[in-house]
Length: 374
Image (cartoon, rainbow, N blue to C red):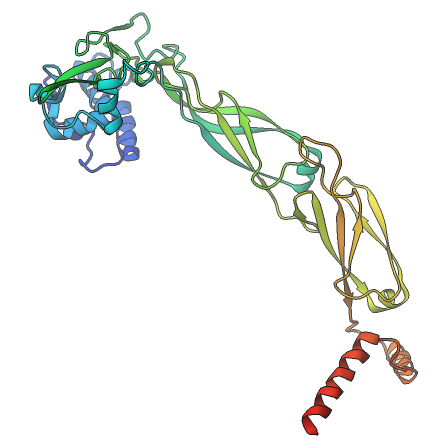
């Protein structure tokens, strides 16, 4: 079966398809024509290999650009179809590396490309942030293929030296009066290519799995705190080291407390009689302790009372922040006849000295009005 057709047609994608679309199409097509699903079907196996070849080219931006410009000729006769012009450099640094790389210690590092880092957003309660905890999360990640041990080659086979670069990882091309060197578009600088790809991973050395990871959350974490779990990101291609997993913490809204760093805030409504006569209220802490807070006589709405060392713990440090209680004096809305009578009696005995702020304000209003009418 001849499969010398356009790579985009093989993957059933438009030429403008983005990386995500290409990857999705590749996985779908590879699953459809996988030899395990089509035992004994030579045409399916040939198409499976062709699909792998197409994706290897199109997933690499530099290689894809060369293919878009020259087609398959870009990878024949030393690259760029022997034309000696066009593409071949992703940016100016590639040209600089070609001329001066060896003189300055060798250009870009060759070798395995580390896997991608991953992000996971985890919401926890304020109590969990206070005490710390150990929890288990599950993530979908590209992990090292067990069948080929991450090599990408079918078990029992291996890789061979790249025919295009001769195992050097770089190829040379004529650019006008100059001979320049660039990363080999076939082996991506590795110097080796996989002739018979692993059936499970399609030659990538990685497969998508759901992985369970135990995470230890230290006391004192705050909104946006980042926890790094080394080596739990995506596996690198062809056995390269895995990236890291970064867990970003989010604190769920609490019924009682608001938080600012290590300081906890809460609003405490009290009756006007407690505000006038003083008293005591009980505020629970996130650790389950109880704090008895004394209300001084004549306290006003908006006054803040502070309990030292009753806030959140310091992350990876010692001590705790404070608990701040903001007082809100509540005016009664449901009074019995007797209560109203007592309040009327109180009003008849008022001298104005009981509420100095109120008296001062209306004295200023009176002076202002007198000035206007003079």
